[in-house]
Image (cartoon, rainbow, N blue to C red; front, side):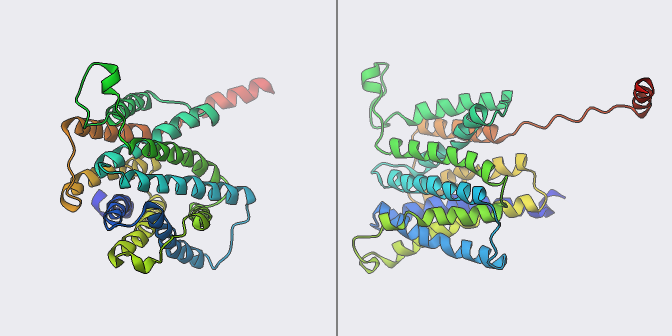
Length: 316
């Protein structure tokens, strides 16, 4: 029975962690913490999970310089995306549901880059996903405070949160490529460890100007929790795959975290979306599912035993 499958419950936990990361990040910002300070706390919050994972491996590194470099690059790009999403959430009017839906479209960038540089093929369902993603981006790029008009000069007001959210979209999309490259040389667990090393490289640049005691304890807790939730979500994702979950099923399922955010944001954050933004969120969710689907490998050609025997006889 599917409800008894361990991979399903690990996937649910991953989904909840990724959604909770966005919600607690917004809550921390609402407590008055600057976005850079939130990112500083995020990094420290991510460390215990990585250290516990490293300890479970008896502090032994997997010897692959290339894998370590790719993993660290994941942390640098992913960290830049984490900081950008905090900046987007901190912008007045930055709706958490809409931002989560837009940034959740990062598989679009990964798919396009994989086709261009890794020579992976694009299946028809992913092309449809790109179309839905484009529609969502066009909808989100329009400032809802600007009255609708067919006049291009008045209809193209871009909200302030859109640019940093677009940075997240691109950086996390490139991360997907480096994840593919890193796991060719090291395990997924060590990819997470090196990712955290990449996060830590940002620490000298985001040290708070004021002591942490100047901020509400609740806000500081939210910042630390955001980092822990991100790495925990990644751990649950790896656990789902190790427990028999197929990538083609687990990846799209875990990418649906914007649905949780959209459902909880009105209650937790007291936010709402416009009807047009709601259509954009729907387009984004459909795109996330379609873009996360991977091409099925072609089945090997079966040659009957009798035919193979005849071929060998003729060659003889």
